[in-house]
Image (cartoon, rainbow, N blue to C red; front, side, top):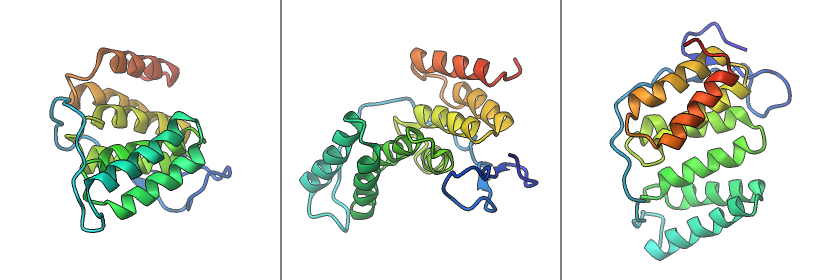
Length: 181
């Protein structure tokens, strides 16, 4: 259900975690244009990390849960990773997979918050285009179809060199959401 605040959504009170009275601010979706997709980023040592091997190992351990469809464990792993390695070059990827762990469990508001974080804080990340798409999927799951449609439309504008398969996924979701052409 949409809130009275333009550019924000409110969670429907249907058991989805989060405070339904707190709008999710999505006003910054179109800011600044993303860079072309590149190679996966390598980890760097953060203040809290003991070294790059630790960051990579922690990330890989959490990602294993994604591969095994153990999304609650993946959530815990990626939350721990982001707390221990906040400045790691893997932080955008960890944020993406944390969002995916929520999305797979229909925790749309939590997922939207993570995907929004990538599009606003890590816009040049290789995960940027996929994150914006997943933000739209999450918004649609929250019943915010107008904002989902705007987000889907923004994928091609912000990321013109996005993978063709992703752009097809965007078109499919636009049809499902009955977005205007």
